[in-house]
Amino acid sequence: MTEPSVKRASRFDLDLPVRYRLGGEDAWSYGVTVNISSSGVLFRSARPIECALPIELQVVLPGDRDGGARVLSRGSVARTVSSGGSAHYVIAATIDAYELARTAPDAPDPIYTSA
Image (cartoon, rainbow, N blue to C red; front, side):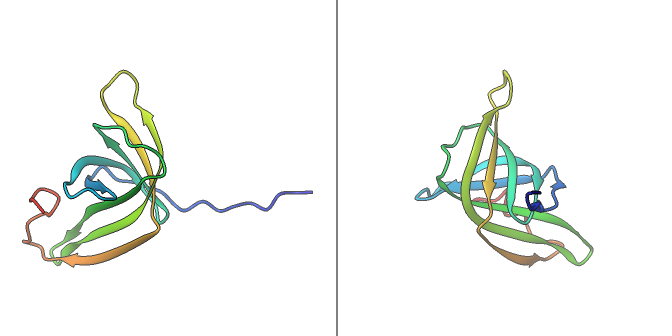
C-alpha cells in the first residue's frame, strides 16, 4: 500500500535581514534568512536557540516603487544546527500565525531601527 504523500510548502531562497525575539524577551536579535515558506523560516543566527521555544520574527520584503511589505510572524523553534566551525547557527522556525503590512517606498526599514 502506498503512503499518502504530504505536499511540502514551496520554499523561496531569500537572503534578507531578519530580527527575532524569543517568548518573554523584549530585545530583538538579528540574523539573515536562508529561505522562507508559508509554514516556516530558515535563518542564520549568531546564537543557538533551544527547540520548542516560542519565537517572533520580522522580515521586510523588498518591493517596487509603491513599497514593500513587512511580515511579522509567530511560531516556535523547530531545529538549531551549528553551521560547521563558524560561530553561526542555522535555525528552523515554524510559522503558526503572521501579519502582513505594506510599507511605504521611503519608510525606514524597521529591521535596522530600534523597536
